[in-house]
Length: 281
Length: 319
Image 1 (tube, rainbow over the protein chains, first blue to last red):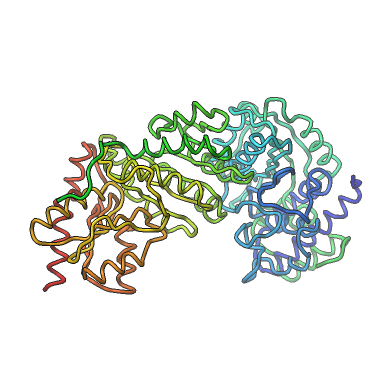
Image 2: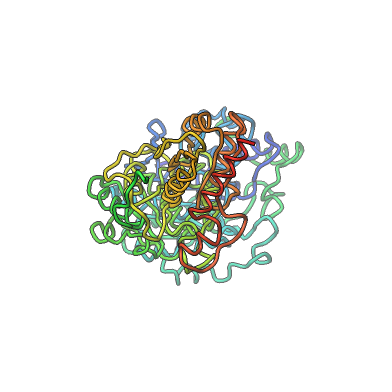
């Protein structure tokens, strides 16, 4: 298994990719992507370790990941490319005409690693639960992971899915809520508060865990622990405490960076804060 | 003289239910989902025989569509059933993103479509579903006419790879097509040949079109009746070859005129062979409570309405 130091190095490069992609496209969503980077790097490089050479849309016999908050597409594309699903040079095509790397993830272009479109919020957990049910029916012991935004929990479909997951004991899924407390219009507390999120999730009968999403050691430890909680009755959900814009000081914890690309000077400044560890695309 | 005989009235939803059960016995990848309407959808026999492959989702249609999309990622062929309104209008974006745009092999099975749902009234009478579903790229839209054809269509969509919207209804209606018929998606069926006017009907109104054909014949008008069971992809070749012969057209459907079968046919005619055309459909109104036959009468979807539309199209052609 890769060490925390090695994972952190990958995360630094992924953050550079994110900044460069949204800057190159003059559009996109850097804030949440930077905040959830450590999680997705750990998930692919330390936990799931998929086989990028043999990607199948059906995903039988392997762990699956679903990105419900599809606006974190830069993060996912970078991790997929850095893991070997496609060449990193393709990251330069993000959001440009004829690209496979659409603004939000899509299956239409058969991008390796992506199994369902997302972007319109609130749908990913239901899809992930369906895939988890298929694994059970197929006798496939692998795990389904799903990342959700915290603001996204304002969509009612999530609560339908949460009720279903517990009610039907879909205990081969680990859902992760990117709890950075920010959404487009401002702090979640000011838009529509989530209140006692842990209490809500516990009352929906999920096994609730928490982790520090920007501490690589904790991310790996908690994800490993979460896998040990599987197949014991309840589905598992992790409240991931993270920071929007993590890694770039002027973006840190600022909801204004949800969906705005940096200008030339800002991009330059951001990149000075993120070490180039694996070579830029 | 009617060429077709009512073999005994049956509901189209029961044709769906029977086929689903048989599919369950022959293909272990068939799974079914329902949102608290298992009995109404006639899915109880499947649920009883295959409890592991039947997923009761409760009153949560958005989640049901997402689950169905996810189940395909594992090779399952999900049949997701509920009333037509809840299967489309309520979950349009879930179908759009997670099913159609993602090209998932989900079968959306919608019962109680149209006015003939009856007494429950407008909240439950879906008259917009065909329009919504046919607008989605990759979506196939099927609206069979009777019990036997619904059964055959259900078998056919299980073999078809890709998202499908299958629309059927609640009341017992004439069952007149062949048992064990072959159902070819996208292939219209000419039930009655004629030379004066083409009637393109779908769903419950196919039988009404056949009744209208008899009346028209008594009045010296030879109508051709074409059963458009697949609204998308539309069998344009069948539509155009019929109107090239008859020179005028009528569409008949239990749906809003805006967005329905008539729209699709009119598009073909306007582009390739413009002829006078009349549409028998709901005229931009919501329905109401009542008995199915009363509602078809009140909203202008009954046999005499098809007769009148055919005569009007015929007269426009001749004038």
